[in-house]
Length: 363
Image (cartoon, rainbow, N blue to C red; front, side):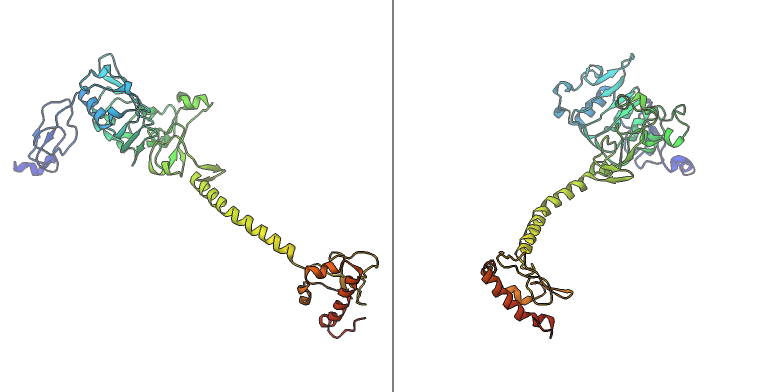
C-alpha cells in the first residue's frame, strides 16, 4: 500500500493492530476490548487477551507464590479468582481488591494487572518486590494504592502521576496547590525521601497511622539519606538523625562510634603514660640559702624535695632549669631527709650556683 507512507501507520501501527516491523502494512486485531492498547505492536499475531484467573495465576507465579510466608494464602492454579485469599470481587464478580501485604512477595509487579479493569485497591506493601512500577496499572479503576517498603526502583510513571482519584490525587477540593494535587509523591515517595506512610497525602485524617498520632493537614515526603531511601521508592522510615535543618545518616553515626571505641584505649594509654612520666620527672625546686634568696632549711625539721626552694634575687633555681641536678638519685633525696644529708645537698648546690648565675658571688 504505497499510500501508507503518507499516513500515520507509515510511521507506526495504531493500537489494536500489529505488523512484523510495527509499521505499515498493519493488521487489525479482533475486538478484544482494548487488550492490545499500545501502538507499534510487533509480531505475527495479536497479543492474546488474558482473563482475570489467568492474570492472577501469572501474578502468583511471578511473585514466588509457593514461598509466600503465610501458607494460608496459597492459590491453586485455575481456582476462581474471587475464592482466593487476599482477593475481593465486586457485585459483578470482577476483581476489585488485591490485598497481599507483608507476605514475602518477590519479583516484579506484573504489568498485566493493568487489565483488571475493575481493580480499586492494590496493597502490596512491605514485601520484597523489585523492578519498576508498571505504567499499565493506570488503566485500572484504582482508588487506593499502597506499594510502600519494597525494593522498587526508578520513578513513578508520569502517566500514572496524572491519574485522578488514586490516593486523592487530583482532588482540588483538598488543596489549591497543583504541585501537591497532581504529584507523583501521592503514589510513592521518590528515592531519597520518606514519609510515615511511604507517600504524600492531601488529607491525612484519612490515613490511620497519622490520625492515631493526632496529625492534621497535608503530609509530604521529607528528605532522607540512609541507604534504603537512596536506593528505593516508598520508604516509610528513615534512620537519619535530624538536628534542626541538618540530617545525619545513622550509618555515619555508627561509623563514628566504632572509630571512637577503637581510638579510646589508645587515648587512655597515652594519657596514663603521660601522667606517669610527669610524676617521675624531678622538677620540684630544692630550697637552699645562697644569699640571693630566702629558702632557708630549718634545723631540726625533716626536709623533703617539696619543701626545698632555691631562689635568687628575682630568679628561681629549679632542677628543671639546672640540668646538673637531673642526676640525683632516690638515695640522694632520701639522704636529704636527714639534717646531715640536707646540709650536703646544700653545699653541692652552692658550688653549682655560679655556673647558673654567671659570675655572681655566692655567699
